[in-house]
Amino acid sequence: MKLLSCVKKQYSFCKGCMACFKLGYCVIKDVAVKIVAKMHDADILVFATPVYYYSVSGQLKTMLDRANPLYNTDYVFTQVYLMATAAEDEAETVESTTKAVQGWVDCFDRATLVKTVFAGGVNEAGKIAGNLALEEAYLLCKSIQ
Image (cartoon, rainbow, N blue to C red; front, top):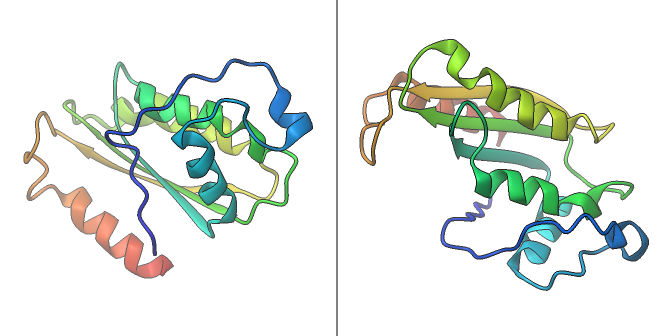
């Protein structure tokens, strides 16, 4: 299993020019092009995001938008998972985040959002220690290897 992190990576917003549908790649030359190529060839996609205002982070939203070149290709992935954290710990906190990722997954006929693992009550770095979602995520990762 390979981990690809977008943390500290600089990539631009999608321009909505749709050139990627004709060319098969994005015309914006930045690290997102390489990330999207790796997404294309991945067996499984696992997205991790903090919940910001009851949705995905801007970084993840931008990456999902930049993945437009994957549509209408012979992408490999069929399973998608979502890992999310938030300061609030109510179950409904992650609903809109899951819905945002589900909307992206719905664009891929062979892909399914299999599961969302939510760690609520995570307000700052290090506060996830001891959260039951860590064990759930660990067991989930072991089961899909």
